[in-house]
Image (cartoon, rainbow, N blue to C red; front, side, top):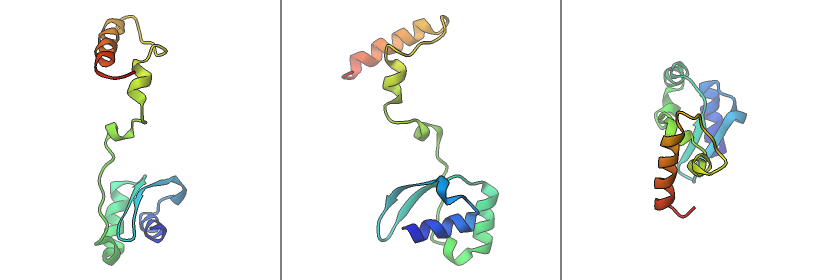
Length: 101
């Protein structure tokens, strides 16, 4: 897997130290890599043979939320503006009813 990561980061001109491996087997790997659409297009153009076996997908915002973030936001330590307080209070009540906090 590390060899695949090296090859992809070289093709994308990406910094390998800013990548994260999410899955790695003998046959497949999944990495989080910070890159641009232009870099991906260039990699497909110049590394065509290798890139035929590589696919990319965006990391949508919901996937970027750290584990247990909703618990922290809905916990008693987190505060909001006075305008949003009633909505947060209602959300906390609903959340606490439906989870084992």
